[in-house]
Image (cartoon, rainbow, N blue to C red; front, side, top):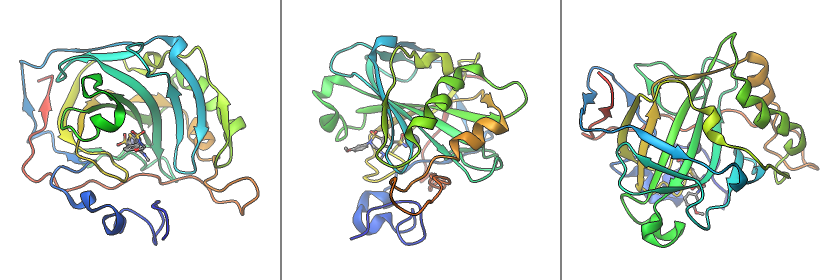
Length: 260
Ligand SMILES: CN[C@H]1CN(c2cccc(OC)c2)S(=O)(=O)c2sc(S(N)(=O)=O)cc21
Ligand SMILES: [Zn+2]
């Protein structure tokens, strides 16, 4: 049976055949319509305290480029905002398009960004990551939009430089002494809603925290990301691009904003 992916024969429209949760009522991503968002003045600001020493490796798994962190204790945590308790940083990864005009998973008033970076955290009160997947408050993902502009964020360089060493599926390289909070934009404004993983198994265990302010990358940096391949070294070249799921039905969910 074909593993899930983003091609016509194994893409988002067919995930539900092997992953029934994909047709749930709290799926992600979503289209955010700022006219329907509810400002919630009770939402506090979120805080990340990350240990740069927790960064371990960067890898190409054929579906994204992922940086993995040591999450065996409360070493790099996210707290505040819509969250109660400290959530442990587990990994970060990206979704991007085949051109600068699309690539993000969430969209804001019809605007899609060139890419979307996800920082995945889980709630240790549920024992381990597998346990957290089964809980509505199990996982928190911070989403940061990447916009192509002419004042690219130098902090993205570190990840993009590493891409040379993980061009093909299965390639992994050490990635240490990295504090991902350098990737945050200036503003802490965010939208938050309850949703799911945007990939199979699509569990609905995620509190999404989407940052309103995109970070800027250059067109060359986006081209670098698009130079990743989804094939293994000895297979025919196939560019790793368009690894994004389209927006899913909101089904009555409320999206809250931390800002007016
Ligand atoms: C394949 N992609 C997922 C991998 N992981 C996962 C998720 C659930 C169960 C699981 O069983 C091992 C692994 S993950 O937690 O790193 C995430 S986060 C995420 S997103 N785009 O919603 O932020 C997708 C995935
Ligand atoms: Zn993601």
